[in-house]
Amino acid sequence: MKTSIATVSLSGSLVEKLHACAAAGFDGVEIFEPDLIAGDHSPEEIRQLARRLGLSLDLYQPLRDLEGVDDAVFADNLRRAGATFATARRLGIDTVLVCSNVATATIDSDEVSAQQLRRVGELAAEYGVRIAFEALAWGRFIDDYRRAWRVVELAAHPNVGVCLDSFHVLSRGHDPSGIADIPGDKIFYLQLADAPALSMDVLSWSRHHRLFPGEGSFDLAGFVRHTLAAGYTGPLSLEVFNDTFRQTDPGHTAVHALRSLVWLDDQVAHTLTEATPPTGFDFVEIKAEDTSEVEVLLTQLGFTPRGRHRTKPVSLWSAGAARVVLNEQQARDQVPHVAAIGLQVPDAEATSRRAAELMAPVAYRRTYAAEQPFGAAVAPDGTEMFWSSEPAWVAEFERGVPQGPSPVAAIDHVNLTQPWQTAEDAVLFLTSVFGLSAGEPAEVPGPTGLVRSQVMHNADKSVRLPLNVAPHILDGAGLPQHVAFSCTDVLALARAAQAAGLQFLAIPDNYYDYLSGRFGLAEDTVAELRELNLLYDRSPHGHFIHFYTRTVGTVFLEFVQRFGAYDGYGTDNAPVRLAAQRGRLGTVRT
Image 1: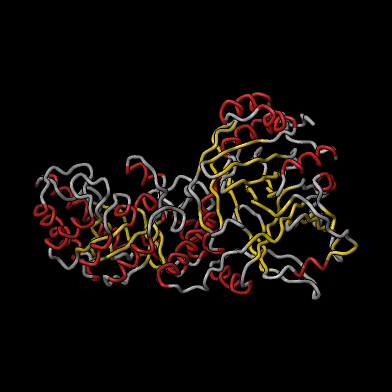
Image 2: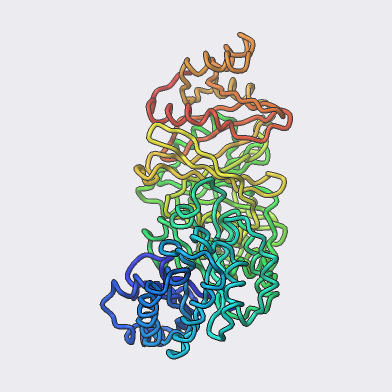
């Protein structure tokens, strides 16, 4: 697989983009014309820089609004095309992208468009250049790749072929199986982008919401298979217009982009170590300079202190199958926060090989010879992910108390706040490295704006990782992370915790008045929920009772009980929780 990326997909100057692409490991790039003309390096200097960096320059783009026009307009278009071809040759690029006309076309005729493309092809040949004709999804007359191919076929010129762009094909719901009708040597270029399923005009969708492969809803693997089966042998190139990526560090984005292509290649050809999704949570780690406040919470909630690590300032607490690691190592000035998640996987070595193949950054921690080694990687938000097949590490904790019975059963989910810059990257990371599936995104209203949430999970939902993106105004601040534990009797746990002095997150009385009317709950049931600061939700498949602790540092705990086949997270209660956390910080009702 030869990899390439359009410079429009990255932020920064053209020179910065080239350096980022080379450092990430791309084979080549597409030069976006505005990037060149806005820079102060000549085409020859860009050509030499790319050569020094080991990058091929694969495509120059875009040449717009050429065909489907009258003779007078076309004469000027030929002049403009010649100037573009001259620049391409100065760059050393032999393929130029020509988009179907969206603005100036006045003649809806395949024959006229073909005749004009033939003329453009003849001119391109004089410069040693080919043109790749692309049907834009919002083209005035030509908006379907199949019609673009008909026009190219009618043009009948060796320097005229097609460019296939996954967004323009899949966003319109066109059937990609028709790609098989195009000879492979006439597919001059392939551009790839994923996208979320949105209901909006296709131009805005394309210009602002494209994603890298694996982050959206398109079947890119099927699209690529059709193209390769037709005989295409050129690069797999990314063209991703996205407001986030054009504001973030180009080095990070380039690595993210290349990982998406490696993942896509694996989906098409199965070239990587097979993904082995985790079978459950191993532990969650909360890190701080001083974890004593978290210890108080865990004690009040019936967790058992299982001991201190024999070589590190780390303690282990457990209840049921749930394990919480409290880490004070190298944590000066840090408040309690979720620092790491441990996963149980069927084959730890296989997961480690896959992580390495997908360029996942390694999380480094000192491990002594007598201690269990973990596979380890750093997620895009900085959370460290560890994995093992057997929890032998538990024996490294000494002088603990034997674990007693508890209504707490296991870790239900770990809710991670994502910076807006890395939200899509996190989805791809968890999908590609761990084989998790992405649920449909949801938006929850909060006191400062909408919070976007998307749950990553394995097949049986024994691993659930909701990813929450705070409103941009917060930049991630003010939106705490939390760990949720499943219970066999959440009411009994709440009563025991109340007796032990637990400070619940105080839920307003208005919520319980609303709850009674919405679900028609009995008065004594509502009174019990009110007394214990419990929240309630119901679906057609069951119901859900849960409560929250106060926030310590940037983390709080949640305890949940699912009844029947309830599979949600009490999403309708989230605005109540967000408002309570923001407006009643420190307010307690016991």
